[in-house]
Length: 188
Image 1: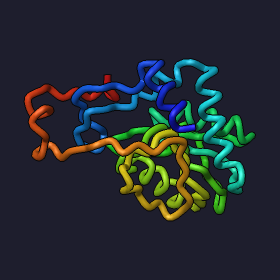
Image 2: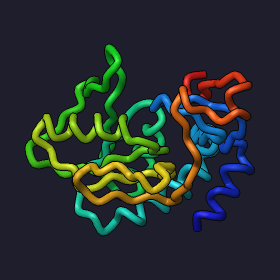
Image 3: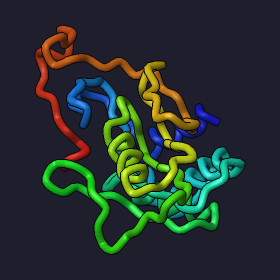
Image 4: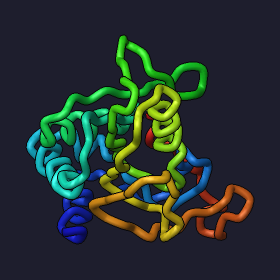
């Protein structure tokens, strides 16, 4: 399943090669621009449906995702599971719950996201659920690019594809990247 998904990323132009700065601050030769994949509604339904299938055995009441990248994933996973979907969004540099979204005490959530490297946005979303008295039943992502350093969110973690993509600290770039200009495609 993961080979056909990587092929789909390449076919839609969603797997980019070059020199990139990730949200985590790490540098990489590859970047998953899930928005380019998920812009095709049939593909979004299929891929997120696969993720929902991997989460189906986990008891949950709702799905939450971090904005912006996780919104389509969360919406489609929620639709496939027959659950409501809410999202956390940026405010003053961090994620917050707005727009009248509520988390009821002991309400069980699946956190859905597109790509995880270090898991910072997912952790912020997990923290929001817990701070509002909810429970995090699982985290589900399309791409786990943590390279075996999967973050521990204190719940089951599932992904459709695991990629071991090299990442580098800004002060430890290999020569081929050090001589090029890095771009942040997620912020364009």
